[in-house]
Length: 430
Image (cartoon, rainbow, N blue to C red; front, side):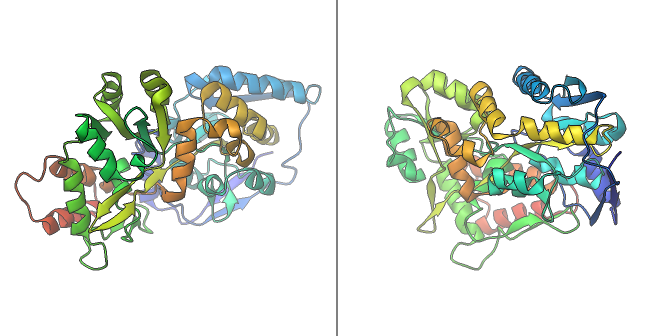
């Protein structure tokens, strides 16, 4: 028996974005939209575990196959005798899940891994069967991870990681725990030692960190396509020009360097960088380069109009979705629940260094001792889910490139802020 999702009031623009959205789960430059009203219907008999032959396919990234196979083996042992299982793992990039699933739902895997910013498109496309044991899964996971996997209070996927965000790496040979509390002090120490703090400055993924806690507003409109933004406001204790000036001060500081993540890794390897804003995907490289001096923490505060503003961040989660058209829907849910339970989230952490979304696992002493994961979890309290329209990205890049160059044409700061907002709120990609 199958669950059917009836999608009402689904706009053409939403379908287009669902089918054509770009993908890069680490860099965060994906766009998702809030689905229109969705009615969920279930056929009688769903939730009953079948006996006999049960064939299931699971999509994950290649690096996770060996780890996932251990979970599947334990699942088959747990339920041995209840069915004749034929469970296969297939390689699929998480960044491509939305396109691969919506391109051919009926031939997509029964279970698939995905980042949270693909959730709404997959719901709107009728691809996701809601989690069956809602209360249990919600209670087991961090509330932020549950929110990321939910729409209108209904949980549509099983969370398994809470580490897709960014934070501060720093070298303890140069910087103390007190030093890394403020951007000012980090830059001062870096300059004194002829070193750098590295950041991918011209990416909207990272640029948001300077605006998120200023009181200014930004987000996606109800049309699911365009953004609203007042980062050029002339009112309030923090104005748009105040942030622009603060960014220029940071970008032109001798202790700062604007460069991509890959260049940051090179910088820690050649000892030119003693700190950097990045994510868990660089943890191994950082640890190898700095050894016992490797440390990580939440993002610092920065000076803006004489005030210390805590840097914010986009945060992200990963989860497993169950195909609404799976021929063995009850078993698909059972397996998705199994591979995301506390025990297997701990196994995933031990073997893949993945930060768990399970509340008990995330609070363990073992995980707290891993600097990168502890840092991204700590930073999450200052972060928000990434929900933006496509015009955001190019506008941020153009703006930040001018800032990183020190505003060489001496453009009035209000004009810079206005141009940024006009680009972000444009009806089409600029």
